Length: 307
Image (cartoon, rainbow, N blue to C red):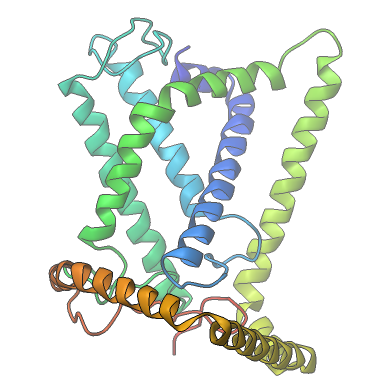
């Protein structure tokens, strides 16, 4: 199937499938960012995006962009032996393994991903005074929005997508199209229901977008000043204190020899890794003694609005 030619021949149908792909990318990106901030970045559960719902449009645009770039190159350069493990990828029906020609779509996708990140970050920093991520303490950063260190992560995403996801995403894309717009066996009723559900999801998405753009600051201020939220914060602090006390009591019951052996092992491990970690920090951070500014979230788990 030549995706681009087919889209021109049935734009409305293909638009529905692309909308499904976009919202799927938004949700998967949200899950990835949520886990990353919980275990590696902010070290707590925070909402990684500007919206309140489980979606990050940056990843939705990224997924659709990678797919369309791959389709554009494969459909217009069918004689190039691009990576095609299934022998059924866009207009190319000849199976082929990795080749030097793959560097062209990989490079274009890589540049587009960085451009998307920069554009999205610039819109929120300059337009809404909200910094969803902050690279200001990383060497080589531009306005704290993009930096070489995290661009390497985008390169890894690019390679993973091109070699592990793209061929099978195309099959899923065509399968989804056939499923939604198939005929016979009561398929029409299923199609209508599925299209209706996609419409409902986008309705919620648009409502979330409107509310977040217009009410972000007001909702944050209202939550911080509400008595219910203050009671919740007091309860959370009391629970944290009780948990620390219980841990201390448990530690006092552990035999001294076991605690001493544990401390010795822990200190030895720290000594073995401290020099390497110090070298890495000097290579990556502008000021190694000042960690990357991850404290750009309020008590409500939402990104802070800059002055």
